[in-house]
Image (cartoon, rainbow, N blue to C red; front, side, top):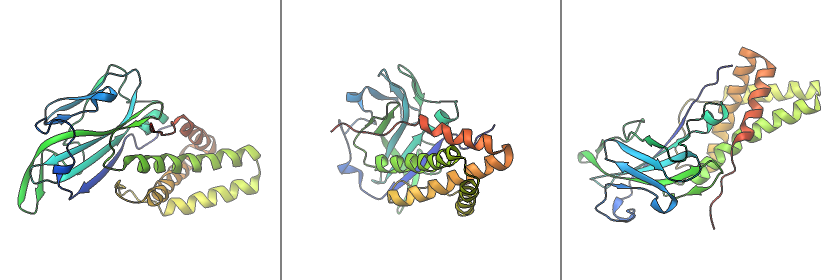
Length: 241
């Protein structure tokens, strides 16, 4: 069974000036979460996330600051690869290049009101570990956004599991009728992280409904049920108080 959507990319563009956002030495071009054991090394063209912890990293947010003060946050999630048995998590002691040009927004240069502006600093805004711990200042607001994404998928999948557990034909028919209605309202447009969690929840719920309907049509109900069981592997996000 082939599953799609390997990596989620979330984007947030903010006009906030970067002067109040810097953490640590203002002269540093790369700023990691050193206190949490996650470093950002390399250079602006090829930053590298180094995991010096004993846990896997399932997601991270990069904050990119430009000479004109523009701030762009990009969150990369590896949850779908975890669900599909092809985890691309950063292992303990491992590292991964985080290409600033890898996305539909940001990169080494952006266009501002006064013309092109070059990238001057990259910071790790947040990191998600495989036990669900979320660390970092989270200027991008990724915690609420990612939590809503996980909840939207797991809530929908739990409904499938419960309905099939009761094995009531009428309930099954109603389930797939509801999923097909949701699927028709799905959109491929990316969801930025600077919108309300309720909006994110609705968008992802529709996308996951479309996925279930597509898998059922292509591979049968057993395959759709197997997919619904996979999201149980997702961790619950939490932060230190």
